[in-house]
Image 1 (cartoon, rainbow, N blue to C red):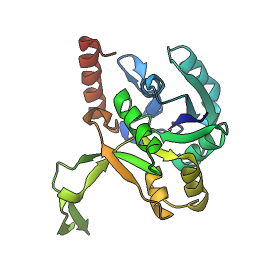
Image 2 (tube, rainbow, N blue to C red):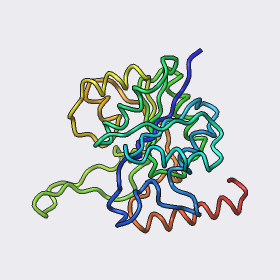
Image 3 (cartoon, rainbow, N blue to C red):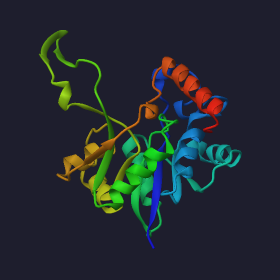
Image 4 (cartoon, rainbow, N blue to C red):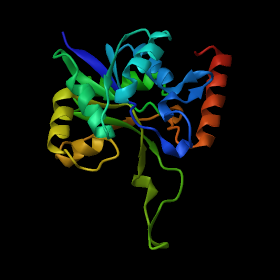
Length: 232
């Protein structure tokens, strides 16, 4: 039998949220974002194991944090690296050989719906080498150089990419091995760089990324709505 693992790179600080705790440990509804993200992954029917890449000096603290919360799945914590790519690579290398599908999810997307997690995993199981959830771009997007607009892009062909992103393990490991040192903001970019196609599925507005203080307010409001509706 083969298994699906979810990897959460959480070794960064997330300075755009301002001073204080690392972004993954900022609280929403009294619970750290990392815990929300791990719970969503663990609750997915398709996920067998969750691996968190934590700051190297905080592995024991993150293990204790997750142990204090109800996470219904096998969870392990490994030391992360200096970059997001390093953290993902280390987490993937720690997986047992029976894992053949890997989901990579940002801790900064703490409220991604469980249904989205399962949909990404299902797309890989159906034959995709790599798959990302996407949303249409609502704003007009302009290309700018030296503070001047040089082009207006056709937003009908643009999509905002979310996580979790799903991969066949062999493809993801190969991409990380060949693209070492390549500056990419997500793992799908590494897969694209080695010439492998990336499929898309419909994303979710609830899987937004918490980057700025105002995003924390939106996350608090969404969590309060869910709790009021008995979702979780």
